[in-house]
Length: 360
Ligand code: NCD
Image (cartoon, rainbow, N blue to C red; front, top):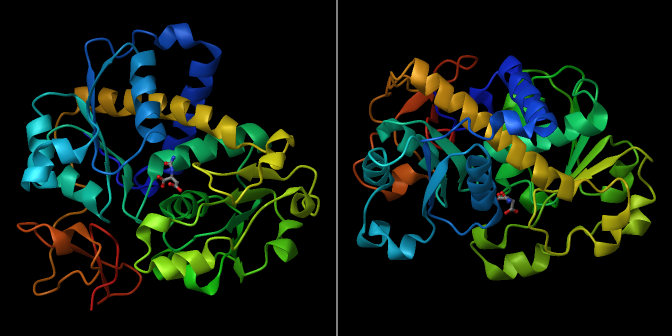
């Protein structure tokens, strides 16, 4: 039985198999209309979301399955102080698979350690958002027909934006990928993402200028400045208009550059761009539903064939270490066993198994 914390829990062959299933669903939806009959998806959303939750729910309905939902933690037992671990243990009795979104980093791994059914991370804090990456990958594949050899620009809030962290993890496994990270200095890509690229000797450029970078890109992935994750409202006000992609800037891009965005957009893409053939963000939404259908099918199938639970990381806890990330679920909920993974390329260096932050 497999669960998904981040996109790297799926290897490149598994990603291609999901893409192939999604393409088959698009071509022959009737073949899949009863595939999940009698199965229930529980959507546990501890953080506001409409589109990701609705995308999961639509996916399950289109597979002939049922959905039960926790949409508002304020009206659930979470408001009484229930932990993520307890919630998923309870829900494991009601459903066959869980999609969970949570505002704290590492909450997906906390759920997976306790759940008796597969869990899909639908976004945990600023850490990861693997099913958005599945939407992104299918969009890139349908637009470009390949992943190898692409120059991919990511622009906006690369610090707090979990979608770009997962997308780098996915694309870094293809060959000749070149990344261009475009952000204000204050919102640059976190070290745990760039460290992975450094360790693999993968090239990336860092710049603050969208105008200077845009002309070299095959893919431009725009992101929203993540207001809700700022400690200081004044800092958000100062940075909120850092990048606005309008037709004047898009005219500097290649004619075949594809513009992606996970949505919701605030003002970082002007509405005038929507009619340009390079704008792919609404197609991306539909692709996300198909990839979630493919993922639900895969995980339910694996759980039926092998109901034994496999933890993604063995709990070889390094004694005495504590996660130093104040946004990590380990730092917030009590009773969570702190678990660390030794960096295989840097012996003696440990990362929190929940949020991937380096330890002291
Ligand atoms: C993204 C998210 O939640 O991280 N949105 C989404 O999944 N539809 C991006 C964002 O909120 O900016």
